[in-house]
Length: 472
Ligand SMILES: Cc1cc2nc3c(=O)[nH]c(=O)nc-3n(C[C@H](O)[C@H](O)[C@H](O)COP(=O)(O)OP(=O)(O)OC[C@H]3O[C@@H](n4cnc5c(N)ncnc54)[C@H](O)[C@@H]3O)c2cc1C
Image (cartoon, rainbow, N blue to C red; front, side, top):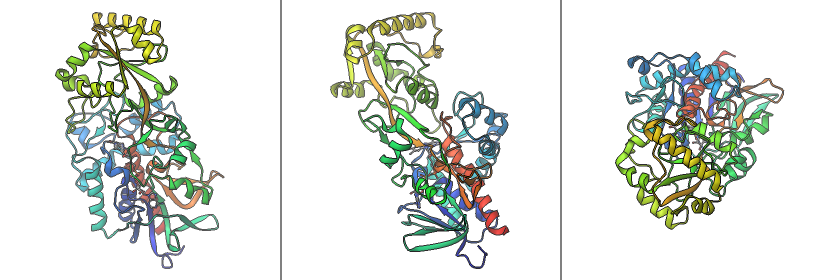
């Protein structure tokens, strides 16, 4: 559509981190008129509720700590964790630009803690922790949007893409139509749409304990918009779930290291302190039902162990106790029938529905590892090795019931163009963030993966959309 005839250069659908980054990048790239349409009455979507930890490789923050890193190294780690089951083109673009975009956030005024954390099990810490969590990032981006004259229209839920031939030329909210040179879809996930969860992320909807931690606006509108223009949707059953005991709605990403996790056969299958994205994948392979076992001695000692019981703690997050696995909560969960207790392991196994022979053997071997100070089987760090030997013994079933994010959605190419079912880009249509389906893979890479998709791919999408809109 000719520049003069259209209402704006770029419309961005959604005001989360992906949308705000896209809007700012579009303006920086020369789009004079940028509009953000936001369905809810508040800016920020899940991004503002988020911890805001963001993964970036080759940043100035890493350099200040003497950490050498690069997009190429992040890319190699990312493909390995996902066993190449992502689209390498866009993933490589995200990895290569991730460091620059974290630095850009810093230039805009986002303050990061000096210490970095690891996203997953990689060698290099590359996760940047913002002071003030995701809300601070959203506030900073929002302020810059205002300063640049980017309109953010609240309460405007886009329900239609305007098209001519194959090309997208704007958006509509009911009868209100806005024409544009390019459109960026940044509508987030679909955790708040139970029917879409059941259809596209069935392993998150399968447990009756499932609960979603994100924003109300996460209704998967990108999936509906995709249907209007014949866009590809990929990433079936991908996302991130965390283990949950079913007692309350307290998010707990990391389990304390003194817990022993077993499957229905009573066998250990993982280092209980492994990164949560990896644990999610391995728990899925166990039929999504696992149990934790511990004894009275560990429960009594837990408060004194404090932060030492976690693999690592996040700067600025002063958590010294497990939210669930501390004496007070265990007593409450026991009263609620969610934690079982017995003086003998075989009676505990019977109550839990776990194989008693397997559990007895596994705990015996685990206790031997504790005495030896070396977890030969699962290689959990020796500082976490506490024997399960002092009755009463405790056990509880955990389910992957906390739904953190979804990763089924629009397939984009290496330049963030939405691909049609004919495998050609849909002209005028770009996407970024949680509404995409080929950036976050089957194994959630780790802390900061989603936010990297939002801010980095968001910036790429905004710049590409502006280029499209202003170069015609
Ligand atoms: C509690 C919590 C903690 C988290 N912690 C982390 C973390 O530390 N690091 C990390 O990487 N990830 C984290 N995540 C995940 C991450 O924050 C999200 O995946 C990410 O912020 C999603 O950003 P987005 O811009 O794609 O979508 P959102 O931020 O959800 O924004 C999408 C916006 O689009 C709007 N919208 C939807 N449909 C329409 C429509 N039709 N028209 C107009 N507007 C529409 C929505 O209302 C919403 O405001 C966390 C998530 C939560 C909830």
